[in-house]
Length: 225
Image: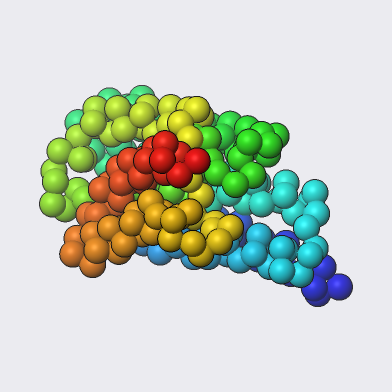
């Protein structure tokens, strides 16, 4: 029984961690969000990994996973955008509510993912964990780049990310079918560049990593497939 339910337990841990993160986001503890998203990502990775290893995949597990991701990687970054706009005194009263576009488009993205057989090995559109990691890096970027906190910059960012979530842009998954360098060259180069960027720039490297993800994904599909 434990073996059968272990993946769903991990998914529920993802959901619970996301909910606690949302509470802290509403309290204004925005720099903590990166750690909550990291914890949610770990649970999200291991629930699928465990289901495959134990051969206990189920329809309810797939649906539960998406419901958890809507909170952890949709609602949590939405609240962070809401708080960033709310804390900026230049924002009109109505503007912070645009932050919740992220959860709407994250839900649409996850619904599309569940019924799209083309996304079994790769992604079409920006995946929600990557989007969430980008959003939770913003409080760190604001410390060095003041323009990031400007309300209309944040609004444009919300609209761009919302579009990317449901776009038809093809992006690779980091799940490797083999360890072959030739088959995964651009994935490996992306991971190396990301690690170097993080070691030098820490959280400020996240926007660079997102751009690299798009660039190397296009190179991968152009030259590797």
